[in-house]
Every structure is written in C-alpha cells, then in structure tokens.
Length: 95
Image (cartoon, rainbow, N blue to C red; front, side, top):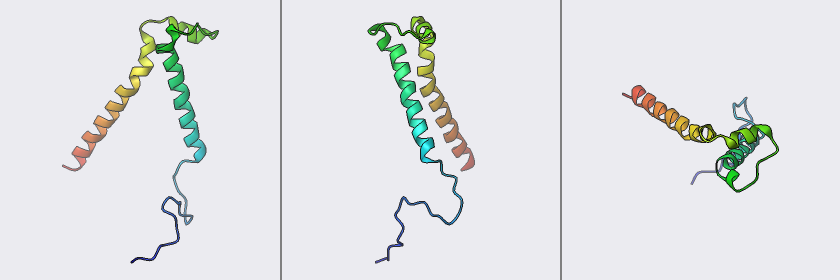
C-alpha cells in the first residue's frame, strides 16, 4: 500500500508559478453568464408576459421580431464551430 503524500488532490502545489485563473475570475464568468441568460430569457421569452422595461435599449430589442434571437442562437453555433474545429485539428495532428 502506498503512503499518502500529504497533499490534498485539489491542492495547488506552491513550488512555482501557476497559470491557473483566480477564484475572482471564475465568479465573474459565472455572474456574467447568469446575467446574460436572464437578459436573453427576458427579451426572447418573458417579454410577452411582463410589461416593457424603462430601459430604452431593452425596449428596442424587445420590440424587434428578428434580431433578438441572434445572441441566443450564436452560442450553440459558435460552440459547434469551435468543437468541430478542435476535433478536426486533433484528427490532423494524430494522423
């Protein structure tokens, strides 16, 4: 049986610089993603049931019938493009 090393598995070693992002960066990404989906969810789905906001920009986007879906549908399209290119690059490197 092997002897435990004394470090926890998720502990970052302190013997050199790391390129890991900070916890603040992670929280910022999560907050921005949640805020984005709340705004896009309101603009695309809930604007029919909730009265218009006092914000001029949101009002213009809510009244639009075509381009308000662009931001929502760009996410899966962009994700598919990135994943497909990454897989293609892996096939190219390993062939």
